[in-house]
Amino acid sequence: MSDVKNADQRRRSAEQLPLVFTHDAATGRDDLLISNRLSAAVAIVDAWPDWPSPVVILAGPVGSGKSHLASIWKERSGAAYIRPTAGSDAAVEAAHGPVIFEDVDREGFDDTELFHVINSVRENGTALLMTSRLWPMSWPVTLPDLRSRLKAATIVEIGEPDDELLSQVIVKLFADRQLYIDDKLVQYIVNRMERSLNAAQTIVDRLDRQALSRGTKITRSLAAEVLNELGNSGPGD
Image 1 (cartoon, rainbow, N blue to C red):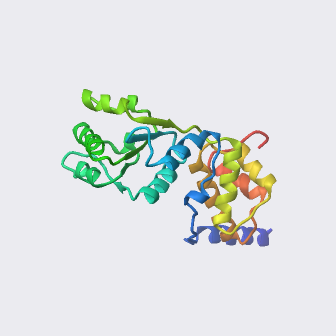
Image 2: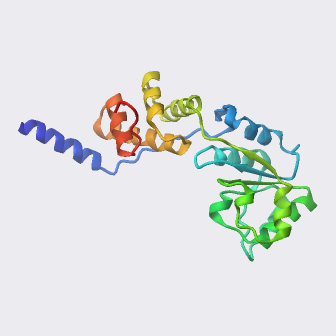
Image 3: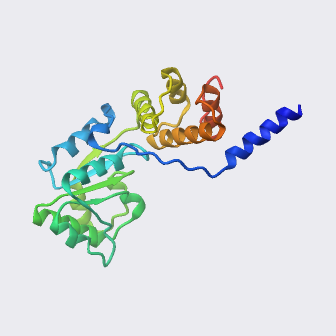
């Protein structure tokens, strides 16, 4: 009994060590996993500079792939990140080339400055890509002219990831770490996890760290433990 207790104490001590292992996540265009829910957003990014309007808004839930797409477009277009707050030079930046404003609904903006940014984009033939969890009609806009400009933007909705995409993402995230796990284990995780790409990232990271700290392989029992810790237990658990 004492040996078991000591082994358990050693395991817990090992898990508490602040070990951080870095890995290179593949985030380029060729690494993008495309499913039906993402195809329209991918198509609009790939279509640049032949956009139907100079302002495009990608709307979707947390972890739906908006930032990945914005990163791809930044690489392709040479866009600069902006935040249209009062007194910023966002409109000036928009006059010089493509710009990106991410997480609009969370970062917040000044109505007048965003209005000037959109006007600058239209007048100078550049482009603006915005990402948001909410559709523009739900943004706290009080300036009528800005609301009118937003109605003229091209809005592309990204839905929640389906099982097929989540499976592909999990496999990719493990591959980024030079890890390869059984398809049945991938399906076990997918059936019990939160439906978001952020959740997939968190689960894979936690599994990798736990397995490394314990010196074990990634197994179904370890996956169940991690999922339960994250509050993602599913049927049959």
